[in-house]
Length: 154
Image (tube, rainbow, N blue to C red; front, side):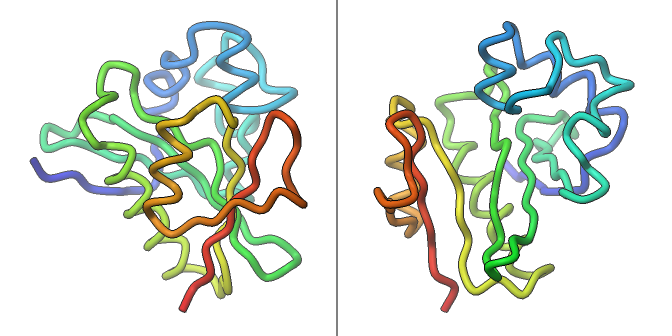
């Protein structure tokens, strides 16, 4: 099955927002200050898409099955965030497809010397995936709840 990463379109906003089924899921995925429910007409502003490009993973039928963002940090790194796969599409390896494509896009479009991300420690599937993709945990920059991970660009 072929998947393609493309910039998020307004037609995807409601689909992605629909994956967030509770205030807790919204807080966990999108962060503080993002409302639940997340209205489609507030999506771009709530996720600061003008400063933090959003990307969707589309399946062979053009359905949106994943989303992620990246933004440059003052440190020279590029931070990946709000990485999510549709609940209906989980367990099929799409997290790897999304992350591989998103990392490649971030490197291609920025001057990143490293990619960084934060992941909830209890999300063991994501932690394992990120480790497998070359991300290394940094306890010094982590919190009891969130693991900070980085991957050097060579």
